[in-house]
Image 1 (cartoon, rainbow, N blue to C red):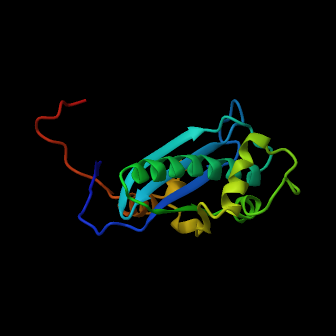
Image 2 (image 1 turned 90 degrees about the horizontal axis):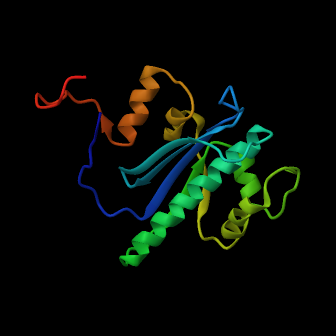
Image 3 (image 1 turned 60 degrees about the vertical axis):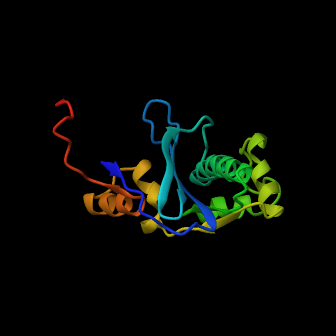
Length: 174
């Protein structure tokens, strides 16, 4: 697989797509977070890892994934601002509960969210970034959290600029 970076106009936003898979690890029951960070059509970073905190429900783990995306998105935004490039930040999640939880103040019905993650609510209230509702079938971070069909995998990989290539003749055979 190769990452293709085609010429494009300077984007106006940093787009971070996040997803989680509730209690995916069979041994520890920890959830998986998937994140894809993009500048226009270019994939800057893609990660898939187990969450540090154990969520007690799907909404909580989706919120932790949203926090992960916000951390990385704000980091890239700050890095680009050091170069004089100011871009808006949009975090995409297909979870309505995570989006609504991040858009209000306090715990509400989510009694078990760790307080160290509530800073996202403050940043959203100050309009430092936007949380957008992404469609479930179009969330590119889905391929980082769960198994999916070959067609969907191919479609999402193409959306983030990854294409299958023939290995070079100089490449060592495995």
